Length: 147
Image (cartoon, rainbow, N blue to C red; front, side):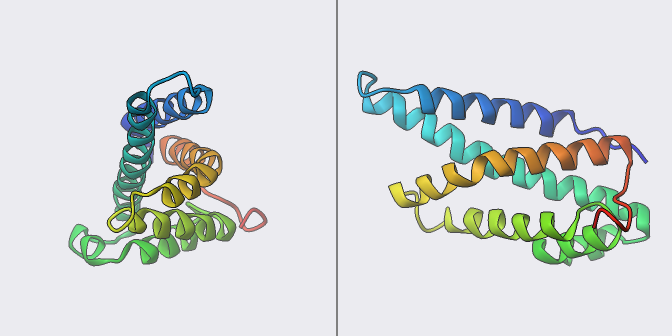
């Protein structure tokens, strides 16, 4: 079944743009301008994850899970279920665990170390989120040899 992933794809494009602008930023720009890019990156990262979780839940309903059960399911367990049903590979699940752990850090630390860790994760995150969006949009599943 196909799922509309337009919103996630828009957020990912905006996140990519914010990352490029941040990487192009120079000392000549004001600290405020650089902070705006950093905030956009962090918020885009958080929003893309939340949209991904929402879309995974929507797709898992096609496998017989109720909305009530999925809402009560911890995020990391959602990833396991997604892998079990061919929505994610095991390697992708491991990376999503890392993204989620990083996301959970935002509640406690918006400092430089957190930003640098997030910036390091972003290229793979964007690729993984785009792959997920495409898979959800087309309704395709990972076959046994891809897992």
